[in-house]
Image 1 (cartoon, rainbow, N blue to C red):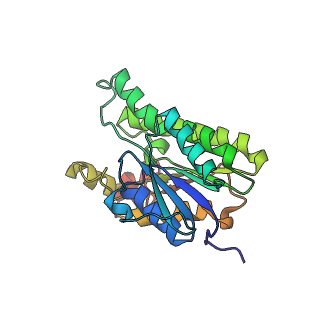
Image 2: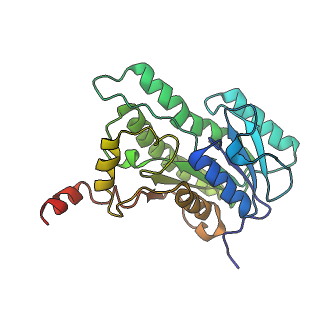
Length: 258
């Protein structure tokens, strides 16, 4: 019977130290996967628990800077040394940069691109050779990649990630490897905790469900895309945004006409 259980599968999650990444890593481990959780910290972050194990259905922590090609190569070599294959990759690591169009520098664009786009490219290049047919890659985008969101460096990077995901789905499909993208909206995470009250209020006003999302709600969609239940889904883009990107700005017009 097809299920959401991932027993016997090995999944790598980047940016797993907190927020969405930590929630994804925990849920995948609870679903039976061996999760290799990665982040910048040299020690396992508190949000992932105190211990790690190499057994199935457990969580193993490895330090990784996703923008470092040598770091990815080292991770792939370590996985091979354990005798494991990779069944899933969640390119969750990301950073934001809130400069507006006329204030953003080339350095701002490069800094965000290196993590949000190049980091995902390097992950796919390093780990797809360890994947067999039936494996799944999930790239974590953003509602910013579906709209004209104002922080230009961040938004441009998430639009670029959409293109990367589509190319990867096309090129890896013949090998039986699926590639999909999830686009979170306003999710309660450490990254969004510092948002201005005006930003929060305006975003909620544009969200049909009228609330922020939780990291667990994003993790649930990631689990689905890694599971056999989505075995014929590739090249898809799944907003997890309470409907924020669905109306193209019509919600404020509709609200005004009430």
